[in-house]
Every structure is written in structure tokens, then in C-alpha cells.
Length: 431
Ligand code: SF4
Figure 1: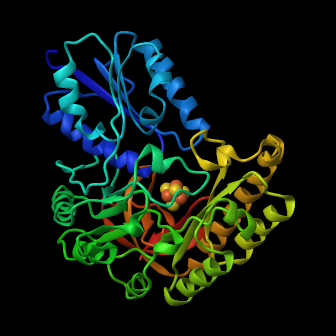
Figure 2: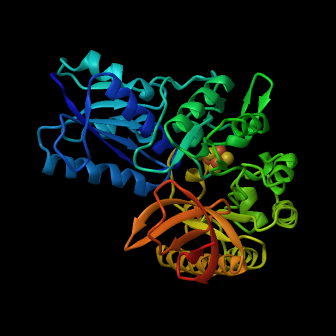
């Protein structure tokens, strides 16, 4: 291939996004020319997701779209669905590479070494538990906040989740390698990094823990904020909460997946905490950290979720200091343990739809209540984009803020006085 062009599309989670950013930089170094997904390209890479059945459908839909708009492109499907479902993916038209999570970060060299062969390449070896490095700096030209991958895989085997199979067992990134990339991201102008992984609270490399990672990142000049993307309830060290309370560079924002407000369902899900433990923890965090934002994930329609169990979820979301929830409809995954639960436990789709609407409405209300509690305060905002004549950015405690001003620049921190709550953001004026 002479100066081949390549484009990427990312499905799924923040970790996939962070890996795509790294892959984009590494294929550029490898001699490819990066183009937008909407433009014709010699190679189109789709970083797949298999967390719900919807993720699988999205891959097929995207492959059809690529073939319609760009029929000469050769397609590489990489990541979680590639790891789990290679047979099905290979049947799709023009798919030339199926590369699982164990080797996907070697995409650039794989593409170069197999460019001349016509046979489809399927590379899905078993994923090892070894610690890892990420050789390039994943500067993200599309976003102001840069994802920084510190961990991968999970050993928890919750019954609804395919991740331990799709991404392998828990492993951590070498400590110095994290700092090297963080310094590079800061040098490239990123002021905020978001620590990503599958189960970041279990980070362990030699004697280093998540707290050591955060402490070291805070020393990096140019980095003003360190945010944790999502963290499992049982893995949050108490000193982390005290650190947040101390107004350091660590953002006052915790996203802690609850999944269900019913202890019976939590047990079937094989989650490692009770509702009482979860509540105790978030109340402690809420008391200790002024204006903290606590978000969560909830699954509705898990097999066996009675009306009463669902009510517990709604009631807890309503009454606890949770400021927003991402709501997911349960989707049976063949490899996950819950895929083997007896089918009479299935909940009809319309019931799942109603329950998820109730929780989504509640989440919007809770978010607006949180925004309301911030009115009159001054918050530091990192401005990310200009939309419809307004600058929009985020506070460290995850409030989306809109300001009308001519004097703001992109990627700039400004103090803002918060004035009015809107549907999905807070309006403010420069302080
Ligand atoms: S903690 Fe549970 S839900 Fe989260 S990745 Fe691990 S197995 Fe999946």
C-alpha cells in the first residue's frame, strides 16, 4: 500500500475510546494517513463492543454502512466483539482483519505485515495477565479531556458481564509508563486526564496502588485535574475520599456502579456489596467532600427483578445522595453467567422499557437537583467547546456549564458564578 488512508470508529466505553486515540497515533507513526470516518479510506477500523446485544448490532450496522459508502475499503474489526465472536464477524463483507483485545494494540504492525495477503487474518489469542505498557502518547485531538489507561480486565465475574472473557483477567499498566504518557499529554496541552480501565480500583503494579498513581499525577506540571472514570464500590480506598475533600487536583466526582437497589438481585448478579454497605459509603463521601457529584450505573430487567425489587432501585436512587444514573436495559449475553439463568426469569421488553424510563426520569431530576444545589457558587470550569454561541465546559464536580462570553478560549480554565439550571446544564457568568 502506498500512503494508505485509514479511519476509525469507536463503539462502547471510555476505555475503547482511549485505546482508539493511542491506535490513531501509532498508525500515523506507521505511515498511514488518518482520515475522518465519513471520508473514503483504504482501511476502516471499528473498535467493537460486546457489552450489550446492541453493541453487536451496531458493528453489523457500521460494516454495512462502510460497504455502502466506501465499497473498496478493507475492514478491520478489533476489540471485545472481535475477541468473542470472530466466526460471525468474518462472515461480514470486506472484513479482512479480526483482532481481539490481546493483540489489538499491535494493529499498526499487523496491518503493515499482512497488507499484501488476501486471506482474512484472525488474531484472537488468549489474553495474558501480565502488566503492560502503552508505547505511544494518546493525544486526543477531538476532546479536551484525555483518557489515560491505567488498567485492563477484571477478576470479579459479575454474572451479567462478559468483560472477564472479552478483555481477560485484571492487569495493570506499569507505573512509570503511566507517568510518561501523562507528561506527554500535559505537554500536548491536555489539562485534565481521566483515569480509565475496567476495574481501576484494583490497580496494582509492584507495590503501587491507585492512590500512588493519583499522587504522582498530581505532581505533573500542566495537569490541573485528575478524574476517575468509574470505580467499583468495594475498591475505593477511604484515603481517596479524604484526598478529594482536600481540594487537590483530584476531581470531586465519583461514578460508582450500583447496578440494582435490591439485595436479592445484587446477590444474583454476584456483586460484592450489599445496599447497606453501598449507602453507608456514599453517605460518608457525601458528608466529607463538599459539593461532590456521585453518579452510578443501573441495570433494569435483570432476570428475577420483581416489581418490588425494581421499586427498591427507584427508591434508593431517589433517596440516596446519587446525582445521576446511567440506565441500561438488561441484555442476555451468552458467555456471561446470567445468560444461563432460567428463561422464566426473563422480564418482558415493555416492562423493561417502562422501568428504564422511570429511572432515567429520576436521574434527570436528581441531576437538576444537584445543579440547583450549586447555584450561587463559584466553580472552576474547563471550557471544551463553543455551541450555538455559548461556551460549554465542565466543573471538576461534573456540572456542565454554559457561558455567553467573547473572552473565553478553548481549553481555558475560568471561574464562573452559577446562575440558572437548564434541562441538561447550568448557565453561569464569568466571575
Ligand atoms: S466488576 Fe463486574 S461488571 Fe465490572 S467489569 Fe468486572 S465483571 Fe464486569
